[in-house]
Length: 161
Image 1 (cartoon, rainbow, N blue to C red):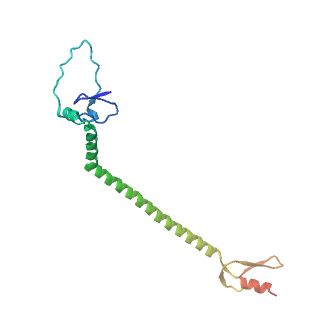
Image 2: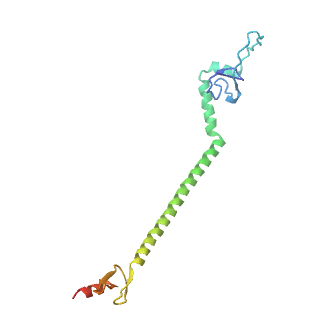
């Protein structure tokens, strides 16, 4: 248990503000157990305006909490924090969009490279008619163990008889 240094209200350990006077938690102290042999200091019977407000209005604690919440919501530092968070979120979103663009470009380049490789590997020269063609390579096998790579027309002509 802690005690408020302003109004000497006994507080819970997890209290952030004194529910009686609104003093911040940094100003709370742990009460010292009195020494029975020590002289007792005189107490003051004077009441503070906060004491009078609390006795006049039992909902003052709730009003105080609402007031603190409103002050926090209306503070400039909160607005600045929100702006910084939105800016950081926008940077993340833009970074993701830029990464997506880069990935699209890389994938397009990869597809084009595959298409070019397929075309290059499928370009042949017919050994019979000396024509350059794109497509499947046909092989004519002769009796002597020799082979000739030809186009489809030459292949069909050779085996058509």
